[in-house]
Length: 111
Image (cartoon, rainbow, N blue to C red; front, side):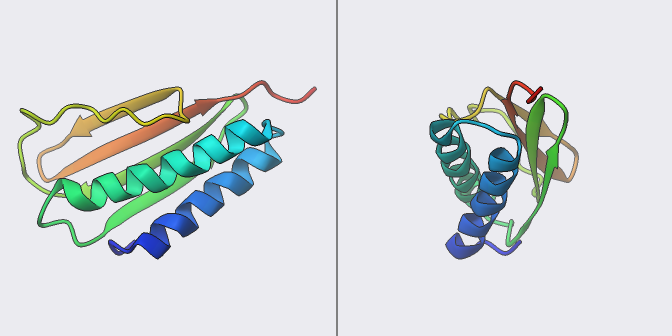
C-alpha cells in the first residue's frame, strides 16, 4: 500500500469489517478501525525510505491480527513501541532490511 491516508482509511475499513463479522461490540470495532489507521500512518512516517508498506489482515478463532511490513534499514534504537489504543497487543520486529508491526485484538468467539 502506498503511503496515502486514503489507503490507511481503507485498511481501517477492512479491519472494521473483520471485527464486525467476528461479532465484536461497536465500541471495540471503532477502536480497532482507528488503531489500524493510526498504525498505518505511523508506519508511513517510520522510515524516510518507506514509500509503501505491505499489510495483511487475518481473523483467527479468538483474535484479529493486522501486520504491517515496510522497508527500511534504520536501527530500532531510540524507537519506542507506539502506544495505540484499540488493540490488546502491539508486537514490533526490526529485521535486516525491513520492519514489522503486528496489531492484535482479542475477542470472545460467538457460541
